[in-house]
Amino acid sequence: MTHTVQITGVEDCGNAPKKQWLKSFNEAFATGDTTYILDQVADDVTWRIIGESYTIQGKTAFAEELKAMTQYKVSGMHFDQIITHGSTGSANGTVLMQNGRKYGFCDVYLFTGAGKKARLKEITSYVILLPSNSS
Image (cartoon, rainbow, N blue to C red; front, side, top):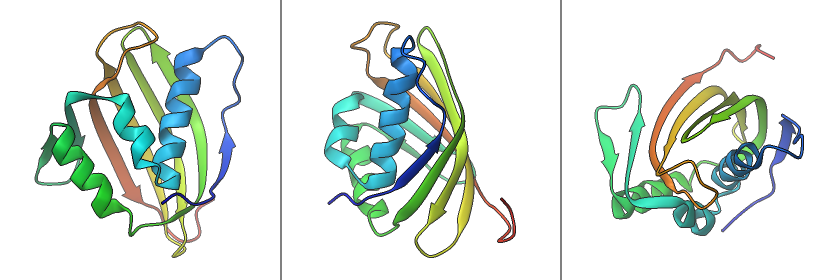
């Protein structure tokens, strides 16, 4: 079940479809749109969350992790940058949770190819809890 999230930051220049794709992908994470997310990843997706003692391998495990994350509700997301080139990309910014906690994030992406229909093959996520007085 999805919910509304205030999204700010990076504007679309109209000539960067993968930037828009990554923005939409991250918005789907923030709103809890697991159907959209799962449609965008390869069957053999790998998700590394730096600081965790495990790596998520495969679409089934990825779906289970998404389901476990539905208990955490995002109220706002701000993008500082979204960068893409060929079969790689990254997005960074901040996420404000409904419980008041704020996190800085940076995700690095590897796609199955450089084309428009490429799926996500690898995600490496860096997430840190920010001090309550950070802007």
